[in-house]
Amino acid sequence: MIFGYSLGKAQRLLRYLDTDIGKIYTHGAIENMTEVIRPLTPMPETTRVTRETKKEELKGNIVVAPPSAHGSTWIRKMVPYVTASASGWMTFRGARRRRAIDKGFVLSDHCDWQGLLESIKATGAEKIISTHGYTDIFTRFLLEQGYDARTEATQYEGELGEENKKEEANENE
Image (cartoon, rainbow, N blue to C red; front, side, top):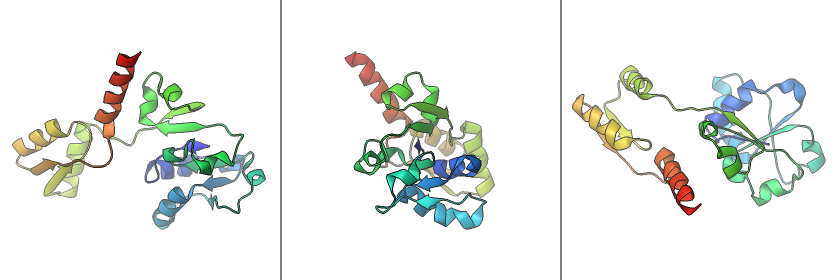
């Protein structure tokens, strides 16, 4: 069982998984996104895990699921399994243990400051909305460069939320 976000990370995983080792099964959220992307880029064959999927079918194969599936009733029917997570957070010491994951793989979809600026320039974006990371600093820089930029809170915490959790955990130890 390997966890990766439903849009982007999961498709990167799917593209580079070794299909010679077995069949690839997917959680419905990942399969839905993959169906949209499949016509645009080469992807291996995948099979959606459904209520009818037998536990025995999954044995020895790979299941790609979103992190939210970890510990859910959906995953419990597949016991026993080995878990892995593909995330940029795996670069931090203790991330695998905190997430109760057996294996961790560093895989980040985030670009750096220069990459963000190059993307903005390449797309010709006229309005930039920063949603996570160091939004205030980045937005201020863009405004100084003459862009129409602002920050916007989302339901996702982003890096600062994760950092705050780590600080709280350290304080509670």
